[in-house]
Length: 278
Image (cartoon, rainbow, N blue to C red; front, side, top):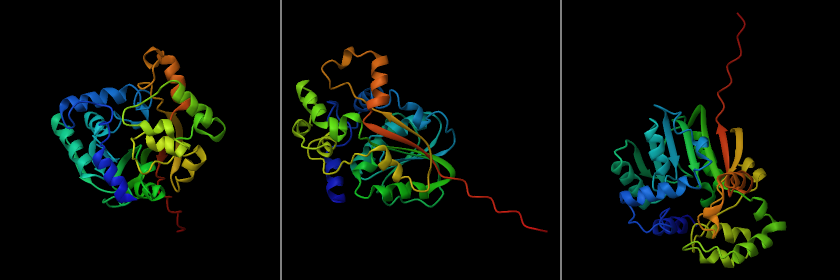
């Protein structure tokens, strides 16, 4: 399965389904950033703490084309990105060079992060671990490489109210009635299950995409201290009426029907040693 996942994302780097600009050009990076700022980052931006990590060691697990890396670098963090594919790592590296930002990018698996224990002050992993076979191992690895007291934000596909058994058939029928047809995602209209639908969001032929309830997502957190959970990502760009939806309505949809659950996590500080009798 891992080889299938790697092959899919090698052939379909994030953003290429939706943008016509040549991958790796400044035009591509600017268009991708503009697109995500309009939905994925529009209301989730505070979760990432882009401007609060000056001088800190930050790791982006599954960095894709590098939009989060660039935001952290602009905020003064010392950034490292990893991605499963050589293609994504190369694109992310090119983006840092194009915008004259410092940082390191390498090829690595989220289930086996190639850094020592207790290395990073902050880790972000947005929309990645639901695509890896052993999601729990990904959580464990992120925990391992974080310093005691460090924080992380991890985002997973969420089984919102429209993707639950009682509402799924109605929601899918409405999706088809509205004629929503994201490019490269024809299979979503024919999906037979929530899992099929969510997997198809990243493109036809995507071999793996999981969707979690809040309880299932929290169960993955293990020894982490959970500081907050938030829903985000209600994309309007593919909907016929999307451009006319007021921001106040979009914000309400984002926080109630968001397609992703964001987990704000902390690695606990070690317990102080008890005082010794003298």
